[in-house]
Each structure stands twice: as C-alpha cells, then as structure tokens.
View 1 (cartoon, rainbow, N blue to C red):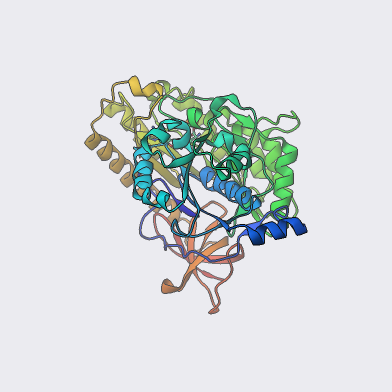
View 2 (cartoon, rainbow, N blue to C red):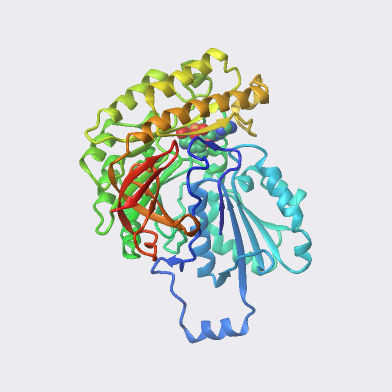
Length: 486
Ligand code: SAM
Ligand code: SF4
C-alpha cells in the first residue's frame, strides 16, 4: 500500500530538518482471525483457480490509511494476494480523498493512465470519498471502472467482490448517509509496523460550510465500547504497544450501549495490558470536555498531545464556517488543556482565505497563534468543494492572496515552534522508534508529545520500529529534536 498525504496540505512541521523516514520492510501483522482456510476443499480450489491479486493505492488522511488496512484484510480473507504494482495485479483499487483541491480530477487522470490495462483483463475499483462524491458518474467518465464504493459501504465488500468475480461490471456501494452501521472487521491487515489504529466513530453530522466529509463518509455513528476494547486487546496481542483512536471527530464518540463517555473510553483503552501509548485524533472543539484533560492528567499511558483544529481565529469567520463555537469558547478549552499538571502539546488545523475573510480576520488568526503557541499547525488554503454550503458564497480571496496568507501564517508558526522546541534542549525523554536513516546514521521516532526525534544509537544494529529509547536532546530545530540514546 502506498500512503500519500494530501499534496496541498502544508504543515509547519514539514521542513527539511526532519530526517526522512526509511520504509521498513516488515511482515504485515494480521489480526488472529485472518488465518488460512484449511479445509481440503478450499485447498483444492486454491490450487486449481488462477491466483487472485490486487493492488491498492491510498490517498489522504490516517482514516483512509486505516480503512485501507481493513479493505486489504477483507480482500485477503476472500483469497486475494496484495501485490506492489498495477502491472502484477488483477484488481486495481484506489482509495481516494476529496477533502481539498481537484482530487477527483487526479483520480480520473490516474485511471486514464491505466485504461489500457483493462484490455489485459485487469479490473478497476474506486473507493473512498471521490467514489462517494462522484458516484455513478465515474462509470460515465471512466467506463473501464467496475466498482465504485464509498467508505460507508465497505462492510459489503465481500458481496461486491463476489459480483465482480461473477463478471458484473458496474457495481456500486453508495450507502452515504443512509447507514447506521460501522465497518467492523476482525480481518485487518495491519501495515503500520509500530502503531495500531482503531476507528471508534465514523462519519460526521457537523456540516461545516466548507467540508465534504458529511457527504462522503455518511452520518456520525460510534462503535460500542465493547468492540473497541476487544480490538484494543487484539492489537496488544499482536505485539503493538501504541494505539491511535480515530474519528473525524473522535471526541464526539457516543457509546451505543450508553456505558462509557469518550474520556472513560480513553481510560479503558489505556488500561489494556501491554499498551504503553494511546493517541486520539481528531478532536472537535464543540465536543471537547474538561474530563478529557483530567483523564490525560491522571493516565500516563495517554499521550500528552491534543490536536484541536480551530480553523480561524475570527469569531465572524467561525460563524460563517458553521463551526458553532467562538474564539473565546475555543480559548477556554485551550486554557483547560494548559492548566493540566503535565504539559500537553497542542496542534491545530487552520484554513486561510475562507470566503469573506478580511485582513482583520486574518490578523485575529495570527493573534491566536501567538496566544496559543501551538507545537504544530496544519495550514490550508480554502478550497471550494462540491455540495458544500460555502460553494455558493463568493470565493472573494484571490489564490495569490490565499497563498500569501498561508505563507505568513506558516513563517510565524515556524518561529513559535523554534522557541517551543528549543525548551527541550538537555531534556531526556522517551522516544518510540519509527524507523531509521542509515545515510545519516540516525534512528527516528516520536516523543509522547508527538514531536519527531532523530537520534544516534550506540550499536550498529538500529532498534526495531515500535521499541522505545531514552534520548537526551542535544539540538533542536523548529520541526524536530535531535539527540543521543542514553
Ligand atoms: N473533523 C475535524 C474538525 O472538524 O476539526 C477535521 C477533519 S478534516 C478531514 C481535516 C482538515 O481539513 C480540517 O480541519 C480543515 O482544516 C481541512 N479542510 C477541510 N475542508 C477544507 C476545504 N474545503 N478547504 C481547505 N481545507 C479544508
Ligand atoms: Fe468536516 Fe466539520 Fe465534520 Fe470536521 S466537523 S469533518 S471539518 S464537517
């Protein structure tokens, strides 16, 4: 699986001082339920039948990356083998993202590049947000596509794959906002060597004026805490020590059994035997309650980092965005986080150039940066998206001005981070190893606060991803820390 982050997202942390990670070629960890079928009949069938292979490419966020892990596990369960290139595959799948830009155009361009492969008998499927957004139009623009499915229909994948194998050529899974079900599967092919992902809530009901997610990922629906905890235990049994809970708005979680609040769920996952770190993303300010800070304070296993997207520092713009909170409301939540006993690192998302954003509104966003002192900011130029209410607002900010505001914002943020990161000089911290960079003779990993740490290691054999090291910080950059293992 190739995982690409959205190309136009600019993150103040993405500068050249962070050592590039080296990809580890490790065996994929399958959930225990993904075991070969051993009946004589199945063995005979697999010997006789031509091998079923698939290639899957993933675009977008961590939720998409994790959805792909579930799709891969489901396909493997159906007897498919994952391969590394379109050329080797019988079935080619793109798991798409449409949060910004002309994502749909990129997908069509990619499909066009490969349409000649259809004549070789290969089949194509478009999954994810572009599939949901464009629906059956995809068949018209790219008639060689056989399967179009949004994420809300993934639970029907086995059935859709069976129809594809039977020769059907226009199969859709476009449940959109109709479904109450979540995509729960034990057959997850865990491809991240050091972090186990768990989706606890899918979809979104918030309908921010600029955002496609409520239209592409369906309505908000939470998993039961029982199934979340079962998955957490399975992840621990596989040897993972870090879990990341995922949701478009992870803290809007509502246990269908009505037993645990989000904060209580955090505490319960943190207590699973073998788990040393629990992260969660993304939190929405509207549903951010004080007990989340209390539980982080009380539970060392919960990482000391909160990602709380603000989007704008101007209450006027927040209102136009339909965020349903004000600057003061947001800052009150920040003050709770800052008053915690152990320092909690803060990061955020900001959109510049939303329709009608005046220079004064933008200054308020800049003031908010200075006030909060984030450790990381993901900054985006507003990008008009299909079906969203903001589409009919006059997109009054020229692209050049959006680009200028974004640059001003990221330059300022870089200086804030330079100061923030420099405070770690001389500190010794626990780092979880994510990879290594032989060219720089460095191991790379992350602190509990989610800060990238590149460090030297005393022996020629680098520690494995997922292991932990105590690292003394010897130099700092605006986007990363440098140190030596102690
Ligand atoms: N649910 C999270 C929240 O409300 O904070 C955010 C999830 S969204 C998938 C990730 C980020 O993409 C948003 O926080 C926003 O900054 C950005 N984004 C979404 N729609 C956008 C658009 N039309 N133009 C630019 N950025 C956008
Ligand atoms: Fe999009 Fe708003 Fe939902 Fe976040 S809360 S996913 S920005 S609609």
